[in-house]
Length: 149
Image 1 (cartoon, rainbow, N blue to C red):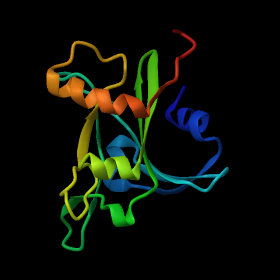
Image 2: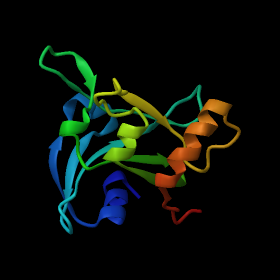
Image 3: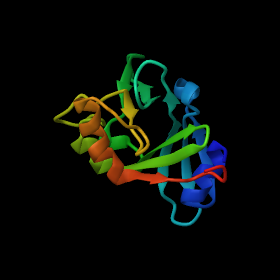
């Protein structure tokens, strides 16, 4: 299943509102679902060779042309991170409020993050920090088995 097909399996039909060129390496885009009009920022995470998990960036340029984390006041309703790895694939779909609570999205109380590592359920033997991150992330993960599984 390709990235777009994986998004369609989760959200149904959608319109691409814009491609986010600053995050083109992660196929960054903002979509709007046809069914209920939700606005969702999406990324395709990359597997990294030296550390467990998958990595994705999500940032924008501010008025001074500096890279900054997305701010809660003008963020999309959800952040969707797709992970695809040979015969394993799934989606993390995080509501905006969770991203604020976890300090990923900037707000009055947090600077926010411009990139995060994601740990689907098939990531095993993680260090303590990664395991704690995986523990909260899995509540927002949905596995999409491929036909080869």
